[in-house]
Length: 189
Ligand SMILES: Nc1ncnc2c1ncn2[C@@H]1O[C@H](COP(=O)(O)OP(=O)(O)OP(=O)(O)O)[C@@H](O)[C@H]1O
Ligand SMILES: [Mg+2]
Image (cartoon, rainbow, N blue to C red; front, side):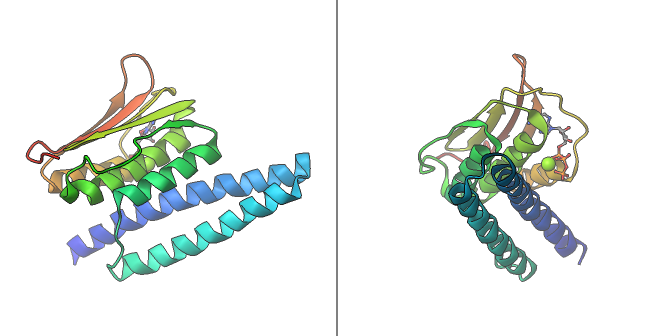
């Protein structure tokens, strides 16, 4: 039961942390569009996104509670691009995820999702770069790199990566900014 509770806590954290961050940014964008530019067409389109993202989050919560939710690396790449676009952060992303060992797609999907959520929430970055290979994934930003005590997000990720046989590093970069890197030594692409 304790294990099941932990799984649920981790999954809900990862799903809602990301979805609500994007929804909040988009809702702010809609408000500013209405208050400042009066661009109704764009406001309506962004409001439509808020509606769609909310429905998706609701479906994700339901699937998580019943244990059916699947996280995919390619899906997370798409939502990460969207979250960064809305936050006004330039994204340098791989086009495809085929290089990554198939058994690592799910756990790296979680790493990408939480690392990008953290970039949006904590970094004040202008640019983020995602790199990947057969057995590694890295999310690096040029923000404050302030770091801080690990919370549920990074602790949950470290636990997921450890369960896959790998390690998670998350620290300020030497040249400024912050980097999160997951490596699973036993897996090749
Ligand atoms: N890209 C980043 N740039 C700067 N600081 C970061 C970055 N990512 C994480 N941090 C720091 O590391 C801390 C821990 O991150 P973590 O994801 O564990 O917790 P959190 O995001 O604060 O809360 P949550 O448990 O909801 O994820 C953050 O509070 C923040 O101070
Ligand atoms: Mg976090």
